[in-house]
Length: 125
Image (tube, rainbow, N blue to C red; front, side, top):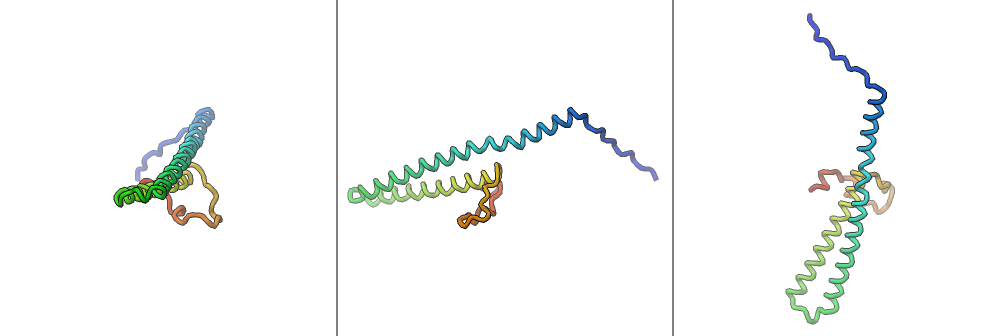
């Protein structure tokens, strides 16, 4: 029987090995560049809290001057703000946990159930 020769892998030079490790470490550490983005989303969520309360105060203080349609639009706007805030929480916590670092909530009594099912595909959907 004839066998085919196995390609020989030449060992890397120590400088080349250091460079490869440096590149790999740099790529891995670069995930921390996303942390400021998640902090920005937290600030955006705070803005949504202010928007929600402004609209709620407007609804309560002017309800006797508002038409039924206007009340409905304000309430639907409040629902939209809550839905967006919920989405922000899912993206902030899930994205940080998936792409940056573990938060360490495993034993916390308020840990959201959905967090154990979060992965990049779920976040995208």
